[in-house]
Image (tube, rainbow, N blue to C red; front, side, top):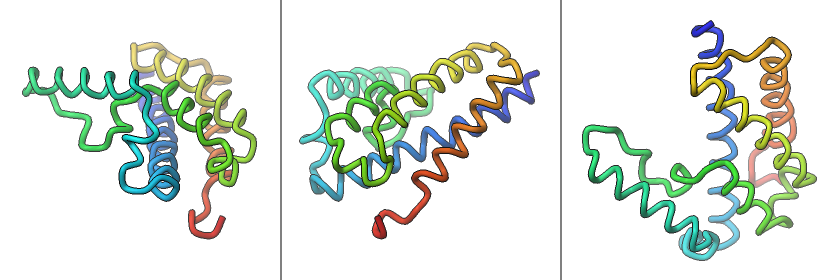
Length: 144
């Protein structure tokens, strides 16, 4: 089961990072180099500061990196997409497309992250969501 869930987690990891990459690119292209200061809510900035502070105290643990988006939860990513719907609709189409899928996948991700085992139909849901995302968004940003 561990190996099988590891394989599913790889797909979730790739999708999550693809979403973060799209967000970063679109917001940077839209708002400029200071996109984080302009786009992030006070709550998101607080979350970033709190999590970075914890990392500073717990130096033996690897940090999430330099990218602010790595410190946000999936719900925060959806909030940023909702804040700039016109910019993201070019890539995602209907914003509901990503809202619903991220909500579902976050729940499934948490099951795996807490040593649970997904049934085969939920594994297929992850695979299908990943394929849907790739079909919908997998185009160079400059061509859309």
